[in-house]
Length: 233
Ligand SMILES: [Zn+2]
Image (cartoon, rainbow, N blue to C red):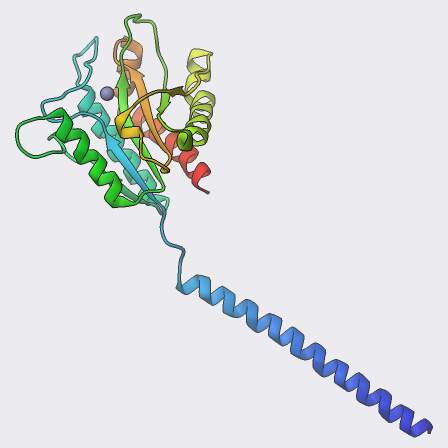
């Protein structure tokens, strides 16, 4: 009887040991498999469309001090922003990569806007950032201002404006801005969160000298990327 019991307990212990080994082995192998799965099939890149406003025969607003064209500053800022997104692992699609209009032929504002919309639609983006420069009758007005056109864009617009307030507006101007809702064609992309960033007031000489500086544009673009990436992840 004693021997039988002992044998039985040994068998039970052995069975338990085998079961435990199997579980541990299973977990280890499973983890290894999961690890190699992520190593060999990376997640698809998220896509951001970066739109440089104006271009071609449409210069946008001009600098009060030097007459610099908004279209040129938009392009420079948008290209740097695209590089930053790409370096961070995103797919960045630009609506405009030269000073030419986005639509071929003689300049037509409607065709230009439709060409931008087409680029956005084709890219199937996770977010759209349109770069512009501001102008205001009161020349003292300064700062970075975010605009949006749909409720789907509100969280991105609010997050981006808050971040730009903390990093760009409050340290230099001592004031914050709220994102502004309005009817903006290029920022109305249905469910795709889309924002317009008015980077500086070209009606203000200090803003103008800041945004015509490549280091300042790089800093601003970096802050835009940080806030958009934070929203997307
Ligand atoms: Zn503009």
